[in-house]
Every structure is written in C-alpha cells, then in structure tokens.
Image 1 (cartoon, rainbow, N blue to C red):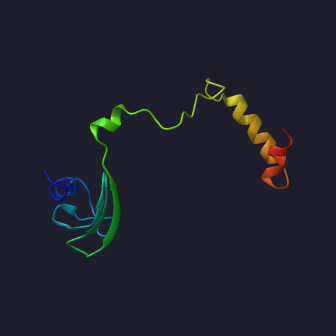
Image 2 (image 1 turned 135 degrees about the horizontal axis):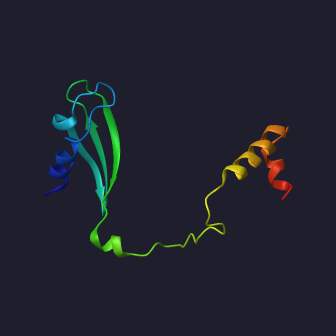
Length: 106
C-alpha cells in the first residue's frame, strides 16, 4: 500500500471540522515527503476547507528503539491527595503578586 492509498484509507475515519461531512472523498495532495515524514494538503470535497497535515510514520524498528533521553521517574510516585490540592488552593487564593514569587520562596 503506497502513501496515498494509506491516507485515503485513513481519511474515511474522519469528518471535516468545518462542515461535518465524511472525508472519504477528500482531495489529498502530498506536498513533500522525506523519510518517515510527509506534508499533506487535505481538501474537503464538500466545502473545500483545506488543512495542512504533517504525517509522521512509526516503523517497527522505531517501536523497539529507546528514547534519546531519559525523563526519569518523579520523586513522588503517589497521586496528589485531596488535602494537598486544598493546600495549594489556599496558598494561591491568598497570594497577591506574580506567580514567580511563589517559586522563589522554596
């Protein structure tokens, strides 16, 4: 299946954001393609609304590849409790001034 066939197949799953018609018969024009990326112009057949899409394909080899950098795990692994949320609300409700002052107090 070539790129245009794949995009046409996927277009059937979407509706135009402007008029709500199904995008199965939309105009698809691949403007540029390099590696696993493509720049595509999609035009609604009903209302002629145009959208530019950047399509990035994930290959099987990329699924197994490790991320280039490790974001690590957060220090606090427990979810935020209701009491903690109320504490934050109290601090923010009583604060007057720029938000950066709150971070400077740490």
